[in-house]
Length: 144
Image 1 (cartoon, rainbow, N blue to C red):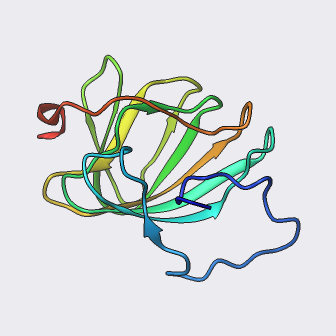
Image 2: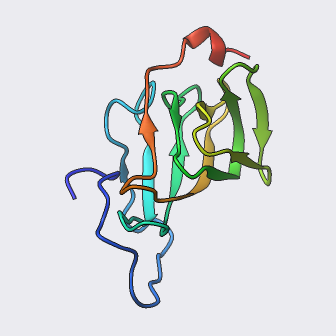
């Protein structure tokens, strides 16, 4: 894989243990307002399979606008984050919260200005991809 978001042909065909801290790498440039780290857990281009990753986001860093062809479940592991779907105001989320983004729903998520943020995201594959990246978020949207 040339970057953390490159997709594999399919998910593992047998049990696979992912140890804490194993395989953590920088997210590719152009998907967020600044650098953050990810641990890819599942990566697949196979229709209907899941992709999953753990993300570790510094304070104030947010993803670009994006959508998922079959939706996304985001579960907050630690810290305080913000989420916003297109046409709505940003919403604060905290440890233990879960957010569902519907298929095709344009949104962004990231760390609140004063808190690091980590989350687990799970999204199914459709037509060989799990995400469509769009443009950057206006920074005034992030200041809450």
